[in-house]
Length: 185
Picture 1: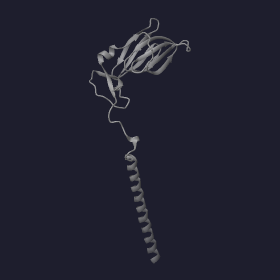
Picture 2: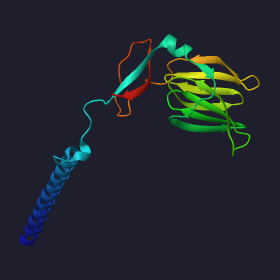
Picture 3: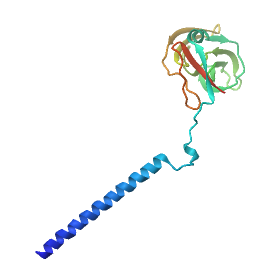
Picture 4: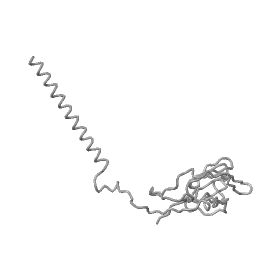
């Protein structure tokens, strides 16, 4: 009977020691988690800007919608995405529009026109139809290559969110206002 009691006693101590070590492990894990979340003071990697170094360029919706135009070619200043379809090359002028080139000879692209679409950064093409994200709107244009003209065939309003600054800040605007770009202070 004494050996039985000794066995029960030994099992009891093992259980207590196991629970104590488990609690110590949980406590150490929680401590490590909290330190990793809050970091050490003075760590410059966790410093976030408290002010925005950019200001929004805002347009009234009426001016924004009437700003679409087909203009003569101009120099590329701030190029964005590049698109090629058949014999055409489109180069985005970030937040301003698209340069159109005759690309039938890739070693010598010839400037044809400039499509002014303020706030635009992306385009999709299908046949002679251009789908452009113009800031918050999805714009559909028909391009007539024979007489070099465009026609706005559709505008889906407020499909995309307002543009945010390069630092990730947003700005509140009135319902009839559109952020078309951000510029440095």
